[in-house]
Every structure is written in C-alpha cells, then in structure tokens.
Length: 125
Image (cartoon, rainbow, N blue to C red; front, side, top):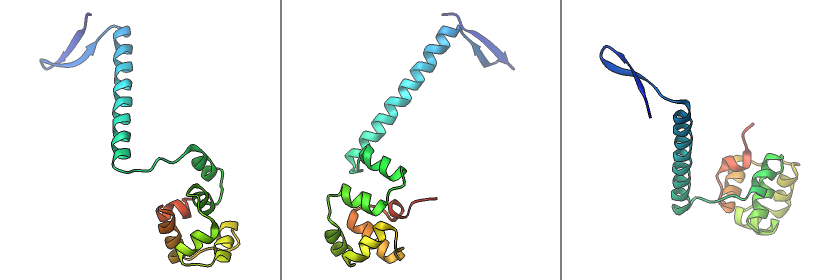
C-alpha cells in the first residue's frame, strides 16, 4: 500500500491513500462503532435496563395512550393498576380514554406503579 504524506512545517498534515484502502478504513470504522454500540447495549442490559418490545414503541409512536400501553405491556388490569396507584378504576379509565387529565401526583403514582418514569407517561410534544 502506498501512502503519500503531505507535510506542514515538517510534520505530517495529510495522508493520501488509494481509494480502496480508504473504503476499507471507513468500513472497519463503521464495524468498530457497531461493536462498541453492541457492547454498550449489553452492559446496560446486564445492569438492569429494560428492553422495550417494538410493538410497545410503535403503539406509543402511533399516539396510543401511554398509560394504557404500559399497563397492558405490564399485564395489569385497570383495577390492579388503579389500586397500586391509589386511585379509582373509573378515574384510571378516564385518564386512559383522554376524558380527564391527571395531576402530576396522580401521574407520578401511576408511573411508579408501572415501573416507568413520568416522562414515559406524559410524553414530549
């Protein structure tokens, strides 16, 4: 492989190399980035970070009610979640249907009961 160095004040400033070598370096760099991303993800999973199934993500992205989506993902009934959150099942039903907005305290209680952070329920517009 022939590499041409271009010097500036006696120090290497640029390297000119064959295009096929450049392409291999780019591919190798991308592969290394993928390996690092994978390793980081595996470390987060080992530390207890939750994997969220694609159907949950898509339901949230499609504008579904986050309380209902997370409740169903957790396999909880409305009655069970309401009890854990300290609210009535009818109030929870109204929150899930969009008929009522919950206070921050209520939403925080629901978030704790679902094992998510408040931002997962109130979203970001």
